Figure 1 (spheres, rainbow, N blue to C red):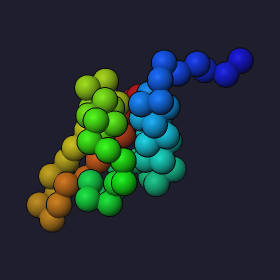
Figure 2 (figure 1 turned 120 degrees about the horizontal axis):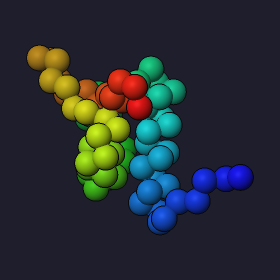
Figure 3 (figure 1 turned 45 degrees about the vertical axis):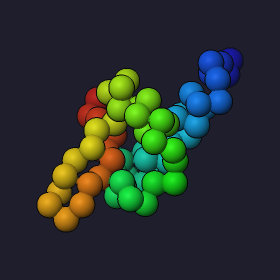
Figure 4 (figure 1 turned 60 degrees about the vertical axis):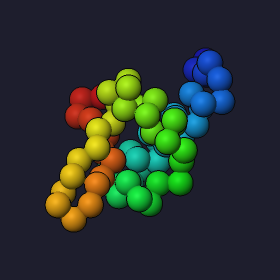
Amino acid sequence: MAKVHKNASDLTAANLLHSLRCCGGSVPLHSIKFSQPVIQALLDRELVKVTNTGCGFFLQVTEGK
């Protein structure tokens, strides 16, 4: 059975998480075309983290999730 999402924001957050996983789990933060509230929702749920590499910020899928 398909997973039911609460609202469009949750669906968009799920799309971003899927995109991150398809891109190897990490992408430059400046290249993401999703809104800040969508990124913040994933950060709040601790599904992703922001890492400073010294050359820029990357959004990464957290390990084990």
